[in-house]
Every structure is written in structure tokens, then in C-alpha cells.
Length: 381
Ligand code: GLY
Image (cartoon, rainbow, N blue to C red; front, side, top):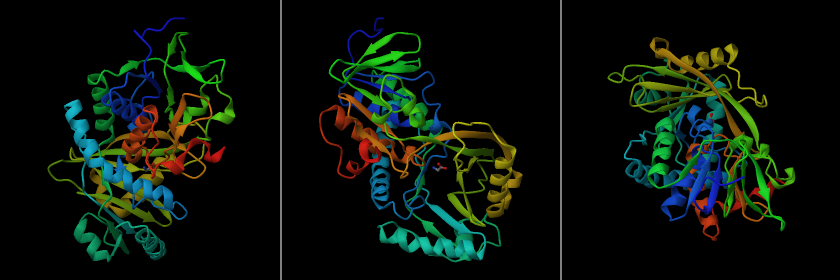
């Protein structure tokens, strides 16, 4: 087995999703030699995502440290997007549009009000709105909504343009893209890792290996299961609709609580609208199911009835990398020269820049930023 690479790269990143590509690009920018191994880069969970950057909308009880990380991640986004656009010579459509959350019935409104105080206690901006204030900000909302809130700092990026730009930025920065599946890691006699075996039996040596394989991280061979953190697939159905960019139905993201269920509607500048998403524990089942599509569409049109006029362009499913505490794992494992960056669950796009900064720090022999430090891979082992 021989390496197709001229010499040993500083790092191989296994997984070319939004996390792996961001880390590879920033590592290459920092002067490292990097390879990314993925048979279909950019086509993982981030391709199916909505691109919400939502520290307030995603803040949940018991996740205070994670919310602090989300806030740091949101603050990192403007410079990351600007640098990426320059590096790729392409737009990612980072949009500081804010989000309006709405409640469809009285108990949805109570649930929303309850959580607003908690969000504000974490330093998030989350201001209550009456129903008419909601409709002033979002005229397309259903007349019957019972009230809501505004999250002025919850923005969005076009996730597909993002991963496309990341691939281009990687290419322009000299990242080697290896279009093959990684089958196993090779162990050294001293218990470390010195490279990656590919499905086609080639071996790629590396100074370090970073597993950024999303929910598949534990499927890599050659590593005892207890070394890798417990990630699992969490299925989501998501829809893409097309409207007229000259007369957009929505100008900002809407999150809706609909009789106890939640959904979101994310408008793009090109007139398309992303509607998501279910949260389903169904293992690695990726089938598109009629009932889930129906329920999602039904919930979304209760909040924004004008949805009925749009063209339904795409129904899809994706598998989020879930973790036991909904937080990511970023850091070295117990095997020398093996790191992981996975488990980003519902916030892979938001967390990509801070995770990439963390991976670059690790590869450079430094510590991750204090805000990322609580999310070491051994915390759930
Ligand atoms: N980022 C929202 C979701 O995963 O559905």
C-alpha cells in the first residue's frame, strides 16, 4: 500500500462535511498541509440543513455551557463568512435577518413565555412580542397567532453555498481532497494513530488524524469503541419551497410553536424557503416518509398560510450527529495523534467556525479556547 500524497501531511481530516471542510480550510490557512478524505464532500448533514445560526432559538434548559459556546460561535460568524467569501471568491449569503418566534395557541404562548426569561438570563436577546407586533415584523403570519418573541441575533447562512464555498476555499488553499471512503485508522505500536486506510486499500500516512464524520464517527475501523465518543444519527425531514424573489413571502426567519410541536421557516434571497425539521430517533433510516412531510408542511402553513402558493421543490432527510447532552465533542482522544470534531447535533453550521478554530489550535499544539474546553471527547465515556 502506498500513499498518493507526495509527503506526509500534518493532518488528515476524515469527513468533508461543514466541520471537516471548515477545519481543513483554516488549518491550511494557518500553514499546515492538510488532506480531507470523503467520497462526497459537502453532501452530509449540512447539505440538508437550513443554515440557521440561532443561539437564542436553540437555547435549552440545562445547556448553559453549550449556549455560551453558541454565542461565541455566532459572534465568530461575520468574520468567518467574510474571510471565506474572499478565499473562495464566492458568496455564502450570511444574512443578519433576525428571527421571529410565534405561538399558535395559548399553551404554545405560555411555553414560549416560560423559556424567554431563561434565555435572557443567559445573556441572549429574546424579547416578547404581542401578536400584532409579530405580524408587523412578519406580515405573512397567520391572523390567529397568539403572540411571540423576537430573537434579533439569530441569523442565517445559505448552507449549500457555504459548503460549496468551503470546498473551493480548500482547493485554493492547497487542501488535498481524497474522494474515497476511509475504512480504518492505522495504529502505531505505541498506541497512537499514524494514518488512514481507505476502502480501496490505499494507506495515507498523517502527522495527525481528525475524525469529523458526523454520526458515522464511530463506524471507522481500527479503533476500540471506548475511544470514540457516543454519537448517534438523529433524523430530520426538511422541505425546500420556491417563491418569487421579487415578492418574498418572508424577510426573516420564523420559528413556530404549533400545538406543542416546533418548526422553522428560513427564507433565502433567491426566493426559496427552507422548512424544517422533524427530530426523529430512527437509527440510520434515511427514508422519506409521507407522514413526516405532511406534518411538517401542515405545521408550517398554520404559521404562514401563504406557503400554500409556493412550489414544493424538494423533500429530504438528513441525519444529525446527536450526542447524549446535545453538545459537540472537540479534542484529542486517548489515542495519540487522534482527535475528533463531531456531535454537533442541531448546530453544526453555527458551530463550524469555532470548532475549526479549535481543531487548528489542537493541531498547532495549543489548547482550545476556554469556551470550547468543556466539550472534550472523553466527557461521556
Ligand atoms: N438546526 C436545526 C435542526 O437541526 O433542525
